[in-house]
Image 1 (cartoon, one colour):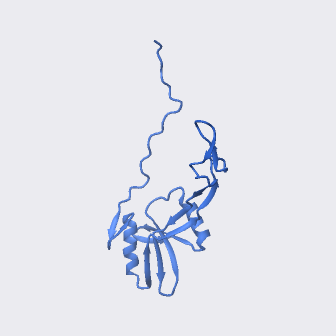
Image 2: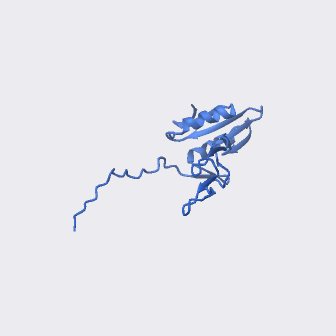
Image 3: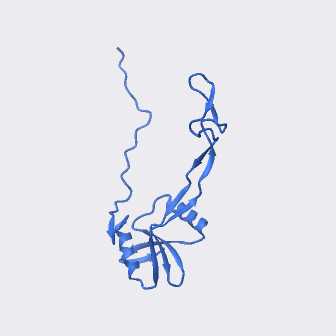
Length: 160
């Protein structure tokens, strides 16, 4: 019997803990992702110049799109695994193209003022994720509106 020693090809990286430890808040029956978001909602409700506050509005920043199916190479048919005869591709259902869902961006607030001005707001209580700058740019490109980023610094709401 041979003595076999298992040598891992690459050490496994330790599982990363969740990046942010925010606690949810429920105010007026609305669940917010963080206490900071909830506090800003209370701040917005006190402003008399605001006509409407929409919580967590969604915006389509990348529309659904089609790509060639990887299994059948865009032909709609592939060889069967047993006999090799051509059969309809079950990944794309014989349509040659697969539909990808695109991407949506969910802001924290859309605020409409009495004078008709509308602004979209995102609240940041900590550091931003790696993908946020890209999502912000895609949002601004698709909607033509500036995304307002607000932080709570020294008990003051600061626009960045």
